Length: 498
Image (cartoon, rainbow, N blue to C red; front, side, top):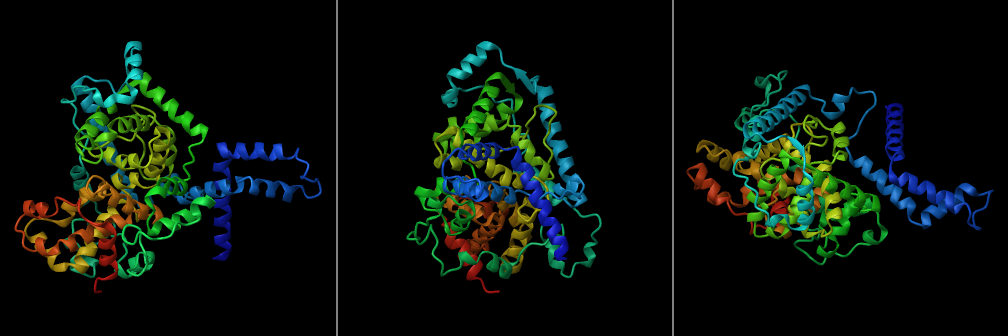
């Protein structure tokens, strides 16, 4: 096995080298190395060591380390495996994702036909000029969006997840009948509380957490500019004043001149072409963020970032590693926004007020985490696993509540799904949401979203035991804005009797 591990490691190294070779960072380091050859302290006989120590003292070695670390965070690719297996090992999941994508695309195409609006068109010069002038105040513009409707809402997606089945799995073999009682019926492994305790040991009740014990010390990681250390640090929460820098460091989002240029090119693309999807973005921002007490002030930022995102072909690269395939038929990029999509961006507006920086952080957050919340896969951070984990945690630790809600037709997942699919954005107060997202980044996993959803039910269990209908259960859980995230998660994980 060691022999095999060695081969796998060298393959991974070869791939990372390959991926970094085409990067801007590679050419910068190469240029720096060539320039340093002219310096008097570089001696021919110790050339290799001298160049290396020059790169180290001038900070390039750390930048390279962070870039390698980022590549390691992205989903792995194994050269021996067929491409579709890299994306998703389970055939039935791949099939379900493909048919879901077809459905979404069909919905978009029929909207185009019905409303006689092309999927993409070149804007006339007058229109381009107009848009350029009002680029920073698009929120004041009120296009008629009454005819446009979201391509799908989270509850449509939930129905698809509920109908998922593994054709090779005989459910009568299940040891306990209990698994039939949840809505998600696929055999995936999810962690139980003892396993979660081990995985999230830094969240135990005796370790200081930012968001509870705000005296947690400021770590030298920010000074050191080390991605891996920053990630470890954010497991206990990030100080408000440092969060923006720490997140950018964890995501290796450097906002170099080439990033700014990329953003400007995308902006130019928005100004030149009008897409049907733009109307969906406008409408989504109007229906969600614009009505939100925390986020309405960021309306213009949201339009800018989302319109650019809908045209970003670099997002395509990421689809090599997951079961989703970008719908290329109407435009080169292609993440079709659903109702609530803009809430993935809104909280980041509190941290970054420079559009290109906001954009590059959002894009990294999307290709690492958020895409998993609206695509079908067997990933432990994927929405299917999160739903299953949420149901298992309730069944195991709050069985009476689970069965009570199920009997009155208020399946807990139907209530919690909308929180999970948006990673709680728009449901918690912003300061609490950012503490939750600190942990998503810190643990490089969305699992904590399912844990929080279960913890919310545990917290409101007494009231929920009294409700007699889905509507009254939803009323008990309608307002989460006063909740404190970290105590809820900690108590649920570390103070629950097992």
